[in-house]
Image 1 (cartoon, rainbow, N blue to C red):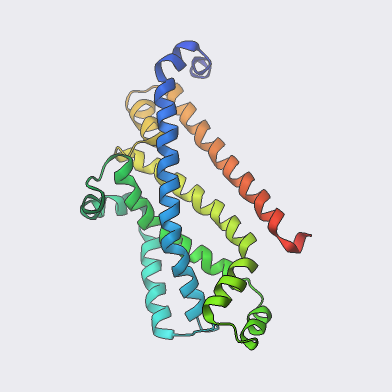
Image 2: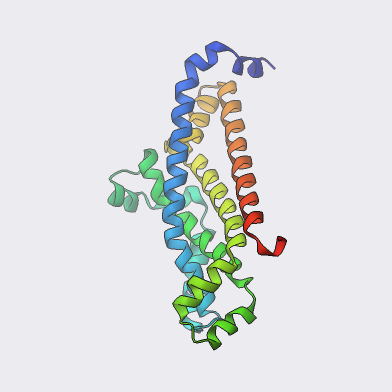
Length: 230
């Protein structure tokens, strides 16, 4: 109870207010940039999975199996282990493996395979009859992807986007345990190491609030663009 009361005190915000604000901004930067690059990689991979599958419009059994295996390996690695194991690669790309910059590379590497599977699942929900109709009209593979697959699966992709962002947010919090910055870093450094329970409480509440906001916004957007609900 005393820890809760401390959160509402002026002294707490005077001492930790700036740190919390910086932590929120660092978290936004990590999640925003990582999400962008993870989708830049994961979205095409998901499209390739659906196109080259057994019932895809460009089936290729060997390619599909190899790509699926690589993605499954990427998804199966716990984030903290992956983050530590690719420190050399991270340093090569961004010059450091700590701080916000150092967290972005493993966040992208870890999230991209997850997003690829999310995209594959969303695209698989598209009615096969719509795809066949586009093919009968002579649409190219690119046109089918751009004008049929993506628009028809957009509500599901948006919902998948919320899950992906929330997952990356969780990974970003974990990255704080090795000095990546953000709210996770504050929770470890102050809430755990220095036993400032009020700081731990605030960071947890902020992370929960961010998750709720992301889920609510994306759910409403998905419902708004879902033509089946109109």
